[in-house]
Length: 408
Image 1 (cartoon, one colour):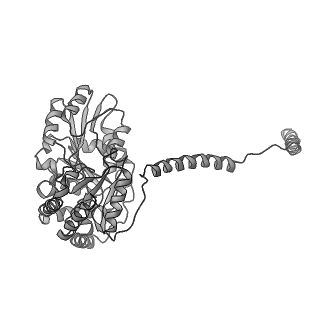
Image 2 (cartoon, helix red, strand yellow):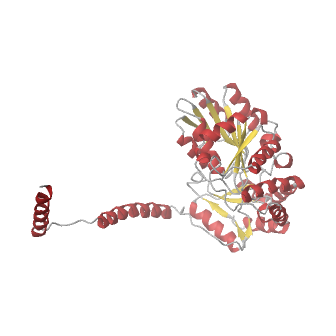
Image 3 (cartoon, helix red, strand yellow):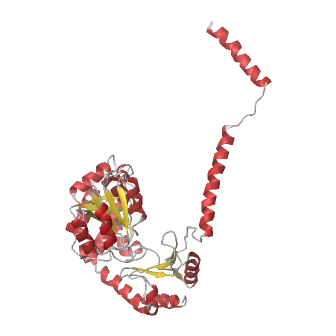
């Protein structure tokens, strides 16, 4: 009975639809229209960047003298480090090229856990947890450690990874003026719940230092926990490159430190240092740790060997010699530089277009110096970010300083 009814009705529907054709809008057409709208948005944003002279592009030219990379100690190109890694690899011929999963599934091993303990001991911390990058470390730490009703207070020049991490938390967020203790205290007075103060020991765009001792003392007055990103201090400051926190002997008063391996150590990844409880907490709640494939054995081995190389000789003495040598060579234009005793020496030009022109002039002279533009830095503070390295010769430093003087 059902079949006898169904077949004629289906035939009538088909016949009626063909007798009275309607305009058809295909799924493909709808998709095209949607993509056109999105592409229009994308192109509008890109055009606005072009008009501001702030459009970012990728480059692959490595023929110039490096004054832009974060490879401050030359570890990334070190034949000594490569040799250490090669020798250790030979001792582990059965290593896997990939970790095969997150560390909570199949990507964990004894080597990585021992490495975490060794790094924690080196920096005089109780424990540590390795992340795949500094960005992942900050994202995981800040998004998980504070909750609704808590407060995170950050320096206005804090790194984007920390900003993004705090945005993912439900905590109240305050920003204090760069290195301004009064501004920080004003925010601390408004803070509620668990309070976290986030700073960098050395700031990546200015190269200056946080007043660590004063900030720690002030934070303790309000029972706030201090988190310090040591990305640009590791390898440069402190005994054998342990960082500024260690240089000032503040490790017992700091809640957490972020140490990155992709800068002075010339490898990749990062570690969050703190208590055993913090390590366990991050394993359970830091999403950028939980839901990502772990770095492979080779990456962790490279980090281990970089730390070994760091202890072999006094790299800090050499890098600080280079810094002082360059500052003396550029003394005539010292007023244009932001105050810094780190490997980051920033020469303020002002204006995106003018800064890009200055950078191109230096590149034509053979120096790879990159412009740092608004919105990465405040408008009017656009600068040439000059990174110094142990492998830059004294002649290169003198020639760079002389060329910078031509920009006046």
